[in-house]
Image (cartoon, rainbow, N blue to C red):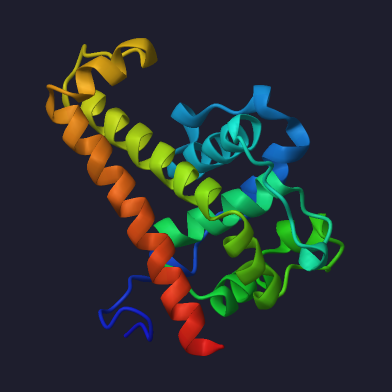
Length: 192
């Protein structure tokens, strides 16, 4: 049983996080990212990169997060929240157990305290990244279910969201993103 949610977790949700992809993608640059070919992890890599570029407030690392760039930390934290890993202590353990991330950090991985500070400083960016992921993933699932269908172009999404089920999906995605960040804040508050 998970100590955080009260329900059992499957091993693939907690032990097989692909955190190394976040540091590999950062070094390859955003042009190398192809979210359609890699599944949910690459959706997060792309969403975190876009959020860092588009955010009205710069995404910042506290000084003790180590050498990881803000886009990598944003992607890792958001990805963990989507996978049901909310505790900063648990995220730190996941990072420590990933050899690719440890190598990229020269073994200076962000501490749980640094991850908490990152979440507080970048709450809006984490919500935006999660929201982008949920929206893209839902659109991908819909196009997989409906052969021959194409995703709604971004220029038409806002107009469609008022009158179509996609608008409900968008609102649900935002609510889900906010709930996950609040859950992480609550769980970290309990362990502090």
